[in-house]
Length: 105
Ligand code: FES
Image 1 (tube, protein in one colour):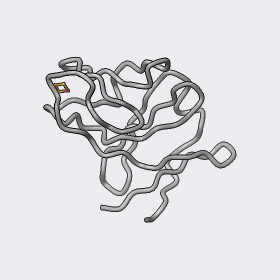
Image 2: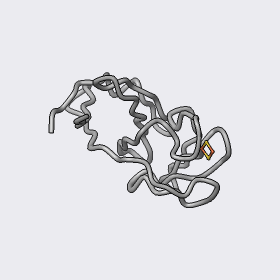
Image 3: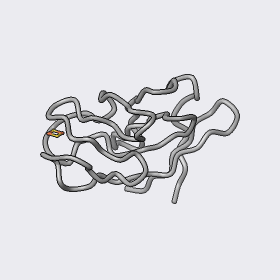
């Protein structure tokens, strides 16, 4: 799967998320408890940006800013309603100061 250089490590401070456009697709990258995670930016329930959600570094989840479903950062699965379908996860990693994500349309 192709790897895309999306930005720098400093773009995603600990405990936050940020949305990147990768080959025309919105992917939200999060940093929680020192690790990076990447999910589809679009919530599986309605039109909301998970990258704008609040990150819980202890529970490794993000809260959808619209209706509050909690999505697991590792699996993309919602832990709470109203969302019930998972979002896709992507491999994301840092090399030096640069962030990469694996994505294929
Ligand atoms: S849009 Fe995310 S829970 Fe409704």
